[in-house]
Image (cartoon, rainbow, N blue to C red; front, top):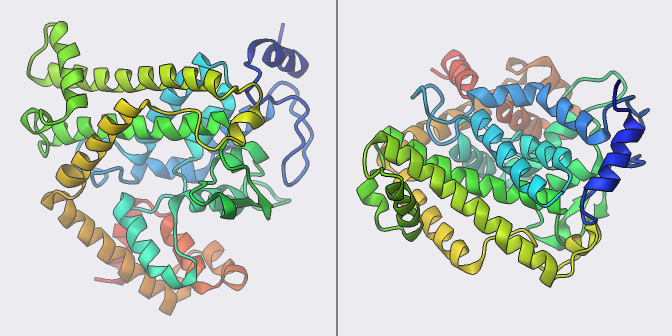
Amino acid sequence: MIRSLKEQYIFENQNLAPYAIRNTGRSDRRHPEEPHPFRTDFQRDRDRILHSRSFRRLEYKSQVFLNGTGDHLRTRLTHTIEVAAIARTIARTFMLNEDLTETIALAHDLGHTPFGHPGEHVMNQIMAGDGGFDHNEQSLRMVDILERKYPEYEGLNLTWEVRAGLVKRRNPAKALLDGEKLSPQPSLESQVADISDDITYYGHDVDDGLDSGLLSEKMLDSLEIWNLAAERAAKNGLRKGEKFRAYAVRCLIDMMVKNVVERSEARIGEMKIEKPLDAQKAESRTISFDDHFARMTSELRKFLYDNLYHHKEVAQVNTNAAAKIRDLFEVYCKTPRKMGSFANSRIEKDGLRRAVADYIAGMTDRFAIIEHRKFCV
């Protein structure tokens, strides 16, 4: 006995909260498709992300530390998987659409350059006169154009809700999708994916910093949020050492998730969120930390920038990585034939510099290093 698509729609209508987005009767792909006999549209979108080349390449892209520098350090792929896990936990708690939430989480970093944020930063500098570069926008470009899976059209042909969830609304007046102005706030499912990204990197960057030796427990003692996590670990008989650090990071993540759930539950009531559009038309986000935790996580973020991301050992690697991207960009602009055939086919439509940016942004760390050795050394 199988659960048919119709039965899955019935299950959604009976079990999801009224403010959750449903699959029922979707027809919002740019290229119409027949429904799958037993998979919902958001399930299909999730699978298309998982089977994409850009998702597989995340395994060899840096999170904080250059890929391959440590067996236990996160990559962009492991970061993404952790984001998706936390996002599903929060989505299930609020009876939101878990498949939609997970899909947005899995796709959120597909547009990242090699070498992490330093790579994105230098690419944005290079492309300043050509519209700039932002990994969020590139993620949408990746699923809409640069993935090649189907003979009839470019991209993965994902649903509107997933694609809209990848658009950052830093300036709501300029937040457009297919020329259509988006709502001031993203869906609740997208908000959950966004804050899960924050929770994940706050926790695992502390974990990787400790594991690498660039951070120490003594350095973290200045942070209120770390002390709260350490107190919880101490209550379980752990006060120092590897097991203490690992458990304290676990407590850190658990505290943040719990705070988001409790604060967001209150906001749903206060803001009278009764249907998806109520959250999307609100003046501020529904899914959030309370003021106390927002302050503590802001302090943690500043600490990570000051002591980890800008650490001299990390900074030297980042400087070298940025130089490689600049070198490669210059080489490909001078000799486009050194890029792949697909990148060359995009030049007429997108312009040379954007085609080069797309090509480099799709690289893994190791492929960028190999290309640099081949053409620049």
